[in-house]
Length: 264
Length: 67
Image 1 (spheres, each protein chain N blue to C red):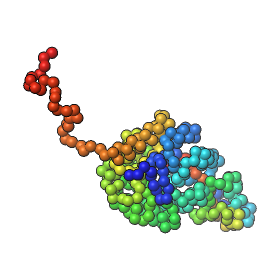
Image 2 (spheres, one colour; image 1 turned 30 degrees about the vertical axis):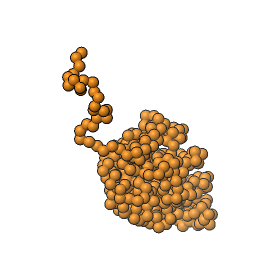
Image 3 (cartoon, rainbow over the protein chains, first blue to last red; image 1 turned 180 degrees about the horizontal axis):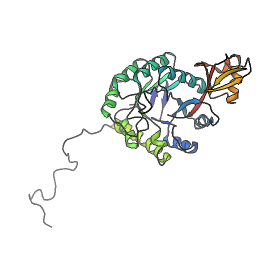
Image 4 (cartoon, rainbow over the protein chains, first blue to last red; image 1 turned 90 degrees about the vertical axis):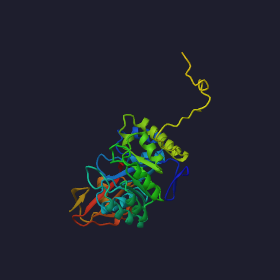
């Protein structure tokens, strides 16, 4: 795995994509974004209202962080496609985090609607980063219809349950050729590190940072966790063993020649 | 007067109002927003020349924190 994350035609030094949802204030979000080292962050598209301020877009411009609009809250391919088109018009980007959910309670992705939307958006020139279940076969479908990246969940959005099925994530990574980012479910730094150790190309998270007691501290932790996880993955972990394997030399121990334990 | 559904709320506009005039009622911003009329995106350059039918559904969206 090279040092840079390459999605579509863009390269990123940071493999952490931070979402902006759930932050207690714009000022804390600003500090957390900086501490995370992220180069791209997600935003949602919503109707303008009296209390809408354009400040999130202004903040990202000021911090020179790329914006990745999402289709959060969409239940059908049609809704997601319209939201993506509106995001392209408003934010002048053809990048979209595609998210089509099946129900409000679990927020789990609707695989069929996601594939339908991904296919149409890719044909329409969008760079599609698709949020999906940790289903290797579905991930392959999303890759085949033209997604630039596939983003399986570790656990439901905002649950903080970590990676519930590490084997599926590892298996999925081995079957895909496009970048795969772990999206959703991260609760703490070790979850992010595990994602990278399993071979993920990056991690997307929001709640784990924005809803932490200290969002800025957690953003820093996530940055280090993603870097550490990647380093560990590339360095190659030792095989797991059923029994102990001493790391100190077995010969030359005091008392071994006399075959008796020294007396104290 | 014609009735337009603007971001989910019924509002009255003078006959012949353009989309640009309708959008202006809800926001003075011209950057960072996008507009759909009856679920079709209308590009910014076309707002001033787009006339609206009575009962049209106009949605004006912007980026907010999320995801």
